[in-house]
Amino acid sequence: MKTEQTTNESPIALDIPKPLDQLSDVELDRKSCIGRVMTYTLSNMTNYFTVNGFQWLLPVALSRSTDPLWPDPGASIDKRIEVDIYGETVRTTSSMIVHKLIASSLAYPKLFILSPNIRIEKAERARTGRHVYEFTQLDFEARGATSSDIMRLVEDAVSGLVESLKKDGGEDLRLLGRYDALKVTKRPFATYDAAKLEEEYGSDWEAKLVGEIKEPTWVINIPREFYDFEDFDSGRWDNYDLMMPGYGEVLSGSRRECEYEKMLAKMDRENVRKENFALILKLAKEGRVKPTAGAGIGIERIVGWITGAKHIGETQPFPKVPGTVYEL
Ligand code: ATP
Ligand code: ASP
Ligand code: MG
Image (cartoon, rainbow, N blue to C red):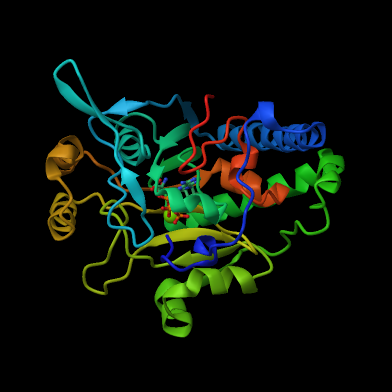
């Protein structure tokens, strides 16, 4: 989550990543180096989740139901892609949140997916350096888990990744000038409450926080989509974002809403089209949506942070920069 005036939105002059065929030899070497870090990250993280008992599900591209991405104070979607097939309207995956909640509740208690997400971000988001219009989340969910279980799991994953990458991929990190800067020494990570950050820093809190922290840091209690757990009495949200120093958000997640009445009330409050979420509502009504918690790590974001890429399109072989459509 973010507001519209974060560092991420600032109109800094930023080179827009070019397609492979337009890169110089030096730029191709850098691309290849970032590519090795990407390979290491994918291998390390998928291994981490499988050894921790998570089943690996393959992603889907088209469904009737996908993440509404609403309400999110930072959402900036230019258009949604819907297409008719077999007489039904389907949408390209914006995130597999609904699939995760149902899959974890019914058949795969602990699961993860490398899930391609299509979000046609507004063209001005090319300048944030943190948005592309196609990206991949390592999206995971665990039945019966608490927020704190997930936060500790992520802390281990991130610390383990940085530690082993420094050991096995130190040469690449040095080439990228990132070896010394990459530090994850403290666990648990520091945690800030979004409501307090807003009081202290105003709506621009994300940029200010990210400019001050020196290590990965959690922000909790962020108002957003219906599937994150909200305590209707206190108004507090049981959710979390992981922020990287000098960089910004790389992960969002939460304990989930699983009660039918609450889901319905939130959809009504937020004008979310209930007909697009008929299945999860039906299952919740039948008591078949179980308490789960999980999160999604933006793969290009975390590799962008590790490698110091100015624009996350640099981490993609075929950059998908908002506002620019290349042949590949
Ligand atoms: P942001 O506020 O930074 O725009 P978000 O909060 O809208 O992101 P989420 O819906 O929380 O994004 O998506 C989960 C994760 O996917 C984010 O934490 C981030 O790592 C990644 N992500 C989201 N949007 C993009 C994008 N356009 N390009 C690359 N990665 C993204
Ligand atoms: N992946 C996120 C989560 O697990 C949801 C999202 O992508 O918006 O909460
Ligand atoms: Mg988020």
